Amino acid sequence: MANLKHSITCLGLFLFALAPLAQAQKDVNVADLVVIDGSPLDRSLNGGVVSYAESLKDARPAVVSVYAKSLGNSYSREELLMQQLFGITPRRRQVPQMGLGSGVIVSGNGYILTNNHVIRQADEIKVQLDNQKIYDAKLIGTDPSTDIAVIKIEEDELPYIKLSNSDLLEIGDVVFAIGNPLGVGKTVTMGIVSATKRQEMGVIDGGFENFIQTDAPINSGNSGGALVDTKGRLIGINTLIQTDGASTGNIGIGFAVPVNLAYSVMTDLIETGTVSRGFLGVGIEGLDEDKAEYFGIDSLKGALVNQVNPNTPADEAGIRAGDVIVKVDGAEVDSPSDLRVRIAARKPGDSVMIEIVRDKEREAIEVVLAERGRDGRIISRNAPATGFLRGVTVQSLSDDLREEFEIDESVEGVLITEVDANSPYVQMLPVGMVIQKVNGKKVTDVGSAAAALNQNGKNMLLVTYRGVYRWIGVEIE
Image (cartoon, rainbow, N blue to C red; front, side, top):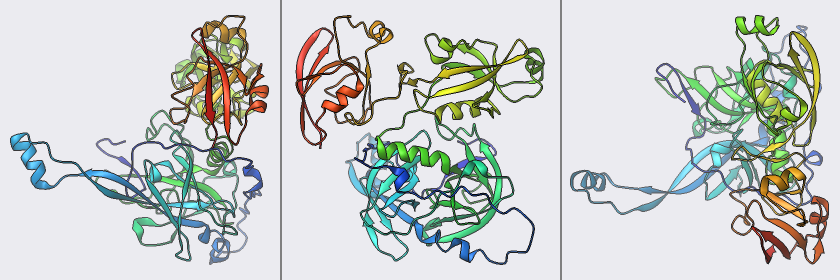
């Protein structure tokens, strides 16, 4: 994002373009792999600290350099000139393009957090540790909506970092940025938390921005590196900086993805191969003084509902246009963006308590969140199936789904409601197809479908799509 005065710079030394495939990891429970230390910091003024070396000794080895290679097209100056003068199309030559960023080891068996833009469209990813040993890295998955990616190296007993609770951060807390800026090598810089909940930056198109702002010096190559507290615990993933537009160097305005958000995304990517987010179904806007007075709000915090989409969780729960949403599960809603981030942090099927102001009176409404597909259509009102085919979401047939997809009451089975564009089954299993049998067993709900599936080999599905019945063979590798 750029304007006449400022520009935003992602911190990888080279940026790629597309989001790669996510791969669910079988029988992996992320909570068993990472260490979370949510104890509060000592913010007293007793005694002066002259060194943080002891606090950082465990964090520094857990930060690694990430190298991403992609093949791109290259043209010589003479070829471009010939194209300009005579319209002769130059011959494409693919040449390696290298990207450099950082990453953070969060488990002893090699799971690493980094930024999506560091490894985007990479054909090959390598990781270099403190001991200079270089590993091939496997891409586990990416979430462009938060600019988070998870990669893995095959090694045991690796140094790893503890995770803190980023919700407990306060402005003024001392923090450290660790990474490989400009490729000079492992570097630690110091600053403070300048702000939290930086939203509406406009750097993640259609994404969820909830950055920690810091003045700890960070530069290109720091992308994916660690922002840590004075206990050496991870509080954020360094992602981008804001500059004055005259240069791309650091001017003391850097941003990191909070570790709580990164951890949630990582858990989904490792355990299910995809990230599912809650959906409320309202159009919202901010408050000004006139609106706050009219709707009976004594501050400018909150999100004013200007539209309730039909047949959405908000509609079914009775939320109306003109309601002001002021709290979610007891936590204050600061702005429309804050509401969007809070709802997206919950899962489809979660029940949340929404506190609203209506006719200048407060009331609480319980809402069961749904999930929204990429085209904006609600695809589920329950948590999506896990342990089924990678990138394929199925739901039990409800009356609403039968009506939406025009499925006759005589048809039994589970309905495919979403297929990720990167799923290996995207060509054979379209949205709207009903799976009636899996390996000869009738399926009536998500549980029976998952139970009948052979997770380590070939499967035969009896399906119906647009009135046509057929068998489809799928193989799980």
